[in-house]
Amino acid sequence: MSRIIEIKKLNKSYRTDKGEVQALTDINLEIEEKDIYGIIGLSGAGKSTLVRCMNLLERPNSGEVIVKGSDLTKLSDKSLREQRKKIGMIFQHFNLLMQQSVLDNVAFPLEIAGTGKKEARRKALEYLETVGLSEKASSYPAQLSGGQKQRVAIARVLASRPDILLCDEATSALDPQTTKSILGLLKEINSKFGITIVVITHEMSVIQEICTHVAVLDHGVLVESGTTDELFRAPKTDEAKRLVFSGSEHIINMTSENVVRISFHGGSAYEPILGNIILEIKTPLNILYADTRTVNGNAEGEMLIQLPPDEEKAKRITDYFREKGLDPKEVESNAYRQRNSDDT
Image (tube, rainbow, N blue to C red; front, side):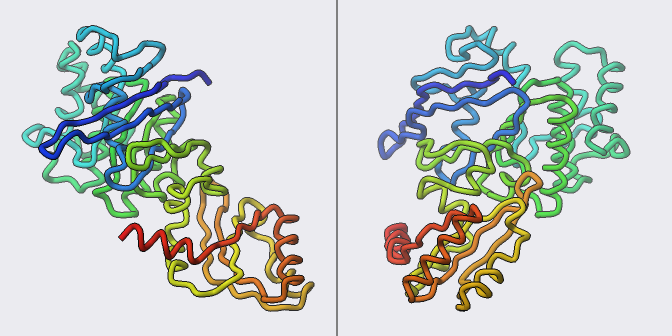
């Protein structure tokens, strides 16, 4: 696959009543063609600003935004408008024309591009069928559910035949079941049309469901990037760990010592490893936390295990974990308590 988006040394700041706010700092990012790339971070991390810089709805203060070999920051207004035609975008709140029918909403960008009304409506029906809403062609947005509105928004973007689809918190307003169906639709579109998809989200469940690669933003800084499998299996930075291990935040209240975190994936998730350890070493283990999830069709998860106070037995257990590829990491409860105190 070839690179379709490349961000180089990108910086973006805003002037406010309280002074200048640095939204993005020295961002470097590469996205391959036909990939589904996730950008995640907590509120205020700079995610939406970054994605809006990808089509120059926000113009960076410095840096390069290279899309299909062209630096958008150096294009004339006319050339930039032409480039934007191949970069679709969907939002959290759908942005549909409420006084127009579903069919007219999808046909609208085609007509704006010069397609005749009859042909535009024919193509619009095809795209509505792609998103599973052909029977709603004559309905109006107010008559649709949130998930159906988002499907119309996706069909409207597909009508412009983009090479890139930017999704800015596109599922944040939807319930979990509807979110899952929309993510499934995006995966289908990626596979069927070969469209590169960039997903902006604060939800790890979205990343693990759909994305092949992911970047983690924190206060406008890109702190970690790589494959989704790598992130869930072995996050390197504190910011990434906080997102991946958010379900085990209760450990900040632990006073227990001798705690390790093990991460498992693939076949190891189905092996009776803890049972084997207990039988072999003949000592009980205290499971403080356990979680299993599916990432790109593979079983991934983590456990927090309290090791026995006997150092020899504890070493035999951690050695066994390493032999099984579980990479045990010591958890310092005091460090987590301190981090929680600092955040508050």
